[in-house]
Amino acid sequence: MTNKLFNQFSRRKFLGAAGAATLLSSARGFGAYASSSSSLVDNGAPDGGQSSTGSASGRAASGGKARIVDMHVHFDAKNPNFIEDFLKVAERLNLTALMLTPFENRKVVAEAAKQHPTRIVPFGYVNLDAPDVAAQVEELHSMGFRGLGELEFVKKPYIDPSYFPVYEQANEYGWVVLFHTGIVLRKKFDEPEDVASGRMRPIHLEEIARRFPKITVLGAHCGNPEYEWAAEIARWNSNVFFDLSGSSLTKMQQRLSRFREIFWWSGEGDSQVKTPENDSSAFAKVVFGSDTGLEGIENVVKQYHALFDACEVPEATRQRIMGGTLIKLLGLPG
Ligand SMILES: [Zn+2]
Image: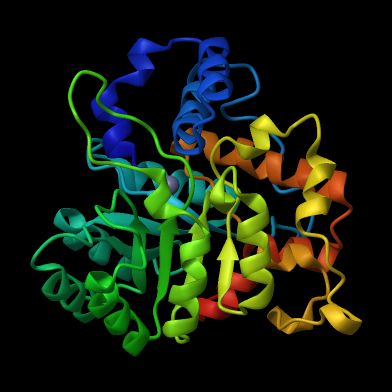
């Protein structure tokens, strides 16, 4: 989900309290909605905001915090100081972001990425239904963008052949492409809206990953609530990964160990699959993504660590999830 929409919706005003946000996210079950709710939570709730603990595991030998790669940070064009604000958070958490950038903001983010290559990896958001989308993608590539995302709000299912030319471009570039998957917020209640989560089901990513094998497919929100489909598709497709941003880790916070039923395989024997560095943990198919306001990222880091503990995720796998996998995939500079 995008901050842009979130701001348009003025939910911060509408819902001042974490309680209201939690109530709404659980009552409506919106993954993307709740990803915004976590921003709300972080604006006023005790467990949001700027607390002292960072990444609890995988510290670098240097004594600093191990580097985190966040695949899901939306550039917020409404905040004129967004880049500076981001850099402060990034320094504090030792974080690198895939910065998901609307096409109209491409220049400022491309420039910032050049100045801060260890903090900002530029990703471009394009509207797959726009008539000039191919030209936009080409321009993003020429400007040094590393991939596309977060693709969402499509008018047709992701696998509609009219979208294939864009995937072909991404395939040619060997790009990483981030897709929203699962439930999506409703912006308008009084007028018709052409938005449907069924077009963004995680099952569609399988076909994209197979038809366009040089694309690394990142699915946001692990298909919420279709976790099983998301995980199984990631299992059989080495170029598919998912983040757990959105409401899932909040919804499941009392039963996080249930994710072991979703990411169940051992990676050995008959269930041997291709994973980063032959990691045998099924959780190696997860990557870190926050999809929250800057002030909420640290809280999502904590949620991931709670998941790791509940599911007894091995230390090496935790490090891959929190950054290792994407550092390697994108060849990020140290
Ligand atoms: Zn999303």
